[in-house]
Length: 224
Image 1 (cartoon, rainbow, N blue to C red):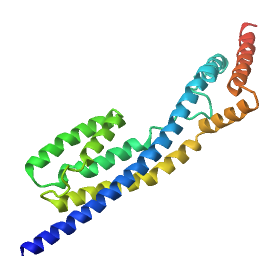
Image 2: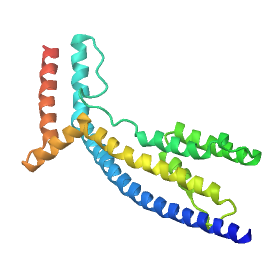
Image 3: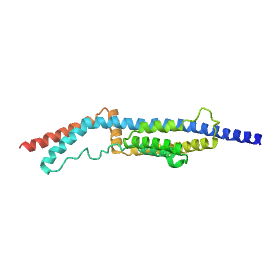
Image 4: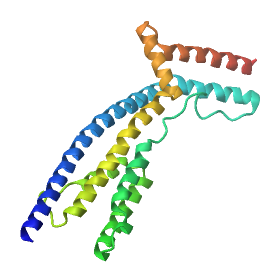
């Protein structure tokens, strides 16, 4: 009987070790893809700030002048320009965390109370849009114990398996988020600006110049 127990624990420990190896490989892949996504997001935000500085403010001024003739309110931002949508990874990160820490997953009252408190922190972070906090909580919750042969190997294996599923889902979601960014009018405009720069032109400056001409023309009409 003792030998059977030892063999069973050894087999479970080996399976858990394999799960840990799979988890670490997935974490590396997700980290790499998250870095690529972050670069797309960062580049788009930098371009958007430059766009609004050079073109957006002029466009709004033009709309205010046009509104004097049409009695219409100016649009809040240039036509065709879509703000970068809130990252879907915020919701995905929250859901991934909730799948692991939700109080309904356990029956022990002490553990339920602990999870309820953590869940409240996760809700607050999600409401405030604090993705960094959610990522930190997810990483802390997913930390494996120092000794992989824990008292409850089955529970640990289930936890690691759930973490693997979460990362696999994230790995599939990232390319879709990158595609969504590439489909934004703002991103396409950024590519056009880069192409123009290669040709020695400043597309944003050119657009700003044209808007200035329209503003001066409408101001002239107003003062006639």
